[in-house]
Image 1 (cartoon, rainbow, N blue to C red):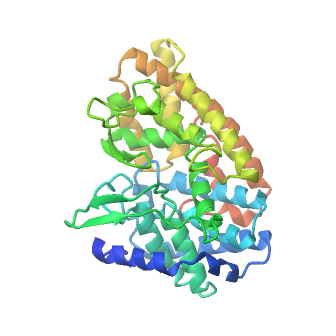
Image 2 (cartoon, rainbow, N blue to C red; image 1 turned 30 degrees about the vertical axis):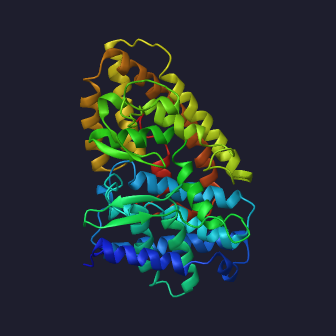
Image 3 (cartoon, rainbow, N blue to C red; image 1 turned 90 degrees about the horizontal axis):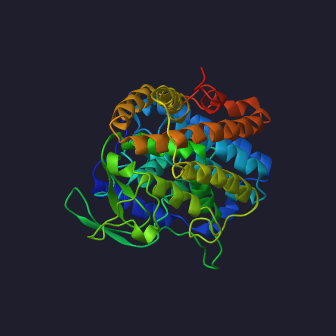
Length: 403
């Protein structure tokens, strides 16, 4: 059984710097793709072969930290397929963006998403190095294509400035933004497309469940500039303040979950650093999901009182949603149960505010899933398979909470 690791962070850091040097947007024109249909078909083949190769490695996908596990990976693959079958763009860029977008969080199987504040080689970089390693087995890919895919995965973490990191190995390293514009100031589309796929599951009804599943343990989150502590009881307070007011007396961010969701919804515009290059079908997908997420956020702001019986019903359906759709694994089931126990200790006002949001999420997800399933059904049946994650992506997407 093969085992993949990153050796020391120092060695992995040097590999990342080499990847940065190897990538040149000018070389993307040499990718051998002639049409949008070929881009989608070839990307799907590359992804499925890579996932097949993963069976030879000692990796446990069901144990990826909830919120970034099998459910997220499946939705990334589905969203990428829908996006690039309907987006007018250069097929060479679509090919790299499809593969990169579908696999951008594969590094979470190596490095925990929420253990990154003392690392310079994080889940994005780990995923990039691992993917490039796996793609060496696919002889029909050129070195350029392997490098472009790996770079797009590394660059999906949208660093907006340089940061100094004191790493666990005692070294201090400077993490810099990735190249996202070419020498003429034009977007490096494979980088942006990979980020687009990431954003499509950081928006809409599945995202509340994803984020909620990360709250079973205290951890540090990242707001694009700094890492900050996340603690369950405070985070669940249904406060909704302006971004600049979400800090304590020491200037440390203390964001609530309502505020976190609103931050993501507000970033889904062409006026934000993240959405400034959005166009075409991406805007349609983005805006529809943003409206859903906003309705979920505002549901926490409407005073609502539920009977004890109704609250129990809502919490049970919410648990089924978490382990049936958001994170369909044993870890998802265990984590959802742990969180329900923690949720029961919150004050009535807070529980009822979030029960209202949970109900809204279920309604919005039903609509979202219905739309996605229609797109999936129009695709070739080869696109249904995402092994070893799932035999059929439709089984992850379709609502499971009424069963």
